Length: 182
Image 1 (cartoon, helix red, strand yellow):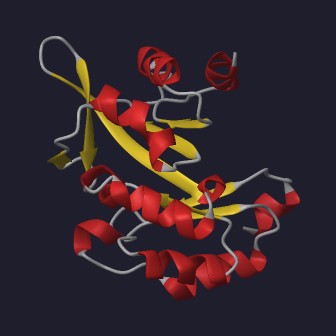
Image 2 (cartoon, helix red, strand yellow; image 1 turned 60 degrees about the vertical axis):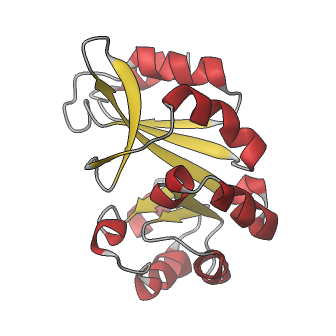
């Protein structure tokens, strides 16, 4: 975090991708430690399933919470959280991969192990109305591959919503990042 402070990073997102899989609560000690050092907006996600957890995380100095499994499996949770902390502080994480011969996009939770029953396009379209302030889209197929972003996925999400997007999965160069921004 100190290095990111020195580099004047705009925002930091910390995701405990194993918390939900293991059925664990957010690591409040870690969150407090990160927030106390952080000089930029901090977003935390992982193991969040109740509004009480969200309130506690925000009380530790975190500006935004990232919710995934609970948001996908129980979309009304997005509204509950937004009513407590404001939409500007609600980031919905969508872990997405292509399925089937047609290459349709599907949302997964639990580190890509559980397919969501929600239709990808319908879910993305509803997120703003539910109270999400941002979407973080992760291409499971390209995560760690360093072969460039899934531009079709990004274009699809952008066509379905005007919410701010953060994209993960595939970046290998500054050119890849510039391509997404443009």
